[in-house]
Length: 205
Image (cartoon, rainbow, N blue to C red; front, side, top):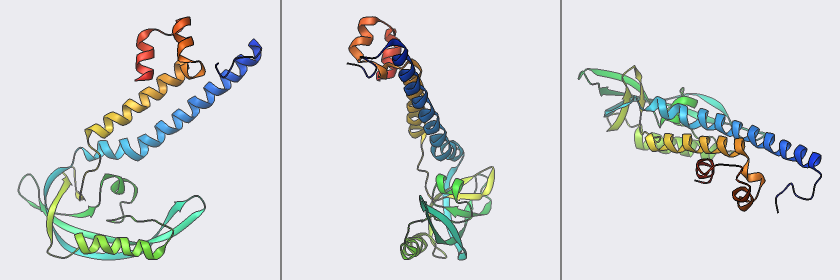
């Protein structure tokens, strides 16, 4: 039985429309969130090229306020690690190290982001990053932005497959809530032939 069975046609139409609209709003909100948190930094990170970095300084700026959840606010130490590297013209450039694309996008003022409820945990986490990647003279692999040489990444966490899967998920959500097969049992959809085979394939897979 579907969720709209045993109702008058008018009631069924009203309930199903509300469910469809609510689903569409949630899907759009999720798409926007994924676009901001994953797709945007992932696409931006594609321009970064591999190189080798050498740490020239590691200093702490003023503590940074951050949100650790709903009604939760705390602070974290702001560590700034500066590195030198060779660009594609073999010229030496200097840039600020960031842990990954997401932290460069959201926390460009600091090299590492740790925002938990515990100040002590944040201090320990940032200190760990400093001990491993902020020692003057230390050398390791990294990535630099040819368009903005002051931007350097320790790692690239978002590859092409991440972008593909996020876009695929967004497309699937849009199709699912546009055609609305979740409002009916799948068998009923097949019997009534409300949707062609390609629509069913894209929504289910």
